[in-house]
Length: 222
Image 1 (cartoon, rainbow, N blue to C red):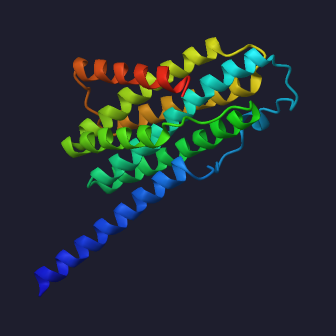
Image 2 (cartoon, one colour; image 1 turned 45 degrees about the horizontal axis):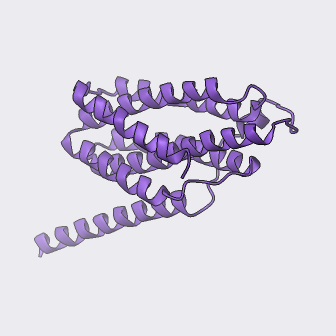
Image 3 (tube, rainbow, N blue to C red; image 1 turned 180 degrees about the horizontal axis):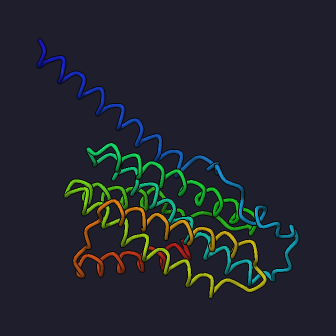
């Protein structure tokens, strides 16, 4: 009787976790995201009006679409890594990082709307792929999962800094958003490092860079 009860409890926990993952996926890919922190252009008291040409708007929209895809992937990664760990403190760390990444998701989504752009049509695919990768990392060990966060956030921060050099100088709103995102990514990486991250092999880091290039190149247009 006791064995059957424990099995039933495990099944309920598993079902709850599956429902939570599905909820995250739907909120990320389908629903409008809501941030818990102020929108950076408003927080930095930037003027509402902008004088961007149509070409500048198209470029900014393409770059912000790429950044939005990165945040879709971040939601999937943190959800899968939180699901895969059995350490409560690390799960709480992943959940907190995911909450802050939700702000990024909402900010980039709002900025895309302001620029007259759209999100990637491949967002369901990006989410599914990132979720699978994060779950694999989490199943290996907590240290590897944390190491994956460190390397991911390092590459994302480099990517965001490159966008700051490509965004039109006059696009102060997009630049404010990207700058705050980069600051947050550095903090997430540092927190994962402090929690005991294990450095990933160079081959894995190289594959991550390659996957990132494929994603950013595709999302720029789709």
